[in-house]
Image (cartoon, rainbow, N blue to C red; front, side, top):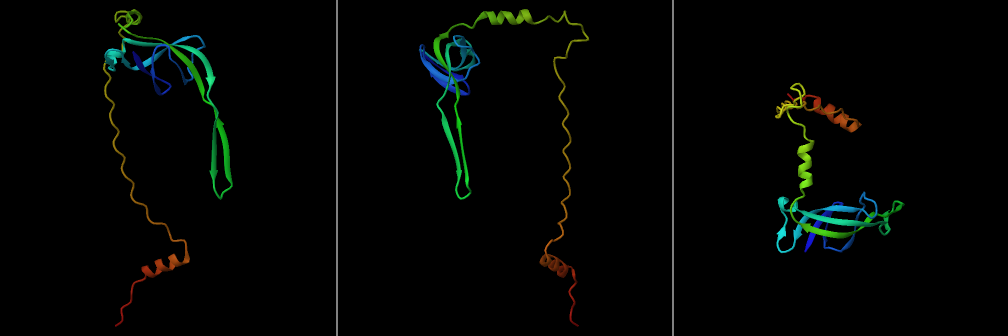
Length: 172
């Protein structure tokens, strides 16, 4: 039995009792965290959203550590450009405690209706419409006319322009 979980923008294949390093989690050491399952596999594979809602992957935060130092060196030849920097990634070491597939917890489902106020409690003035009207689209902007060419800057270009502007004389 294993699961594929997503945390820190990466996916990991985990089994019960496995230890692994993941991107830093905002939980204190010793706390339990719930990981988001992407796939669950025991006798059958479960990867649809309805089936994964019933799967829970629980892990315990063992320690917060820093990864190994990476050295980054930039160099451009014949330009005298050299830069050296480094990086150490913040990581969390976790141990998978439990991978369980069962019915969805009812505590979350029961809490939602209790928190929602009834329609009778709200006055008619505060009630919001259920359907919003679609926004009107703005008219497309008209395209600007093409700009005239700028005056030539060089002497040769100025002479060529003046020559082209003179009418040709015919020999009679």
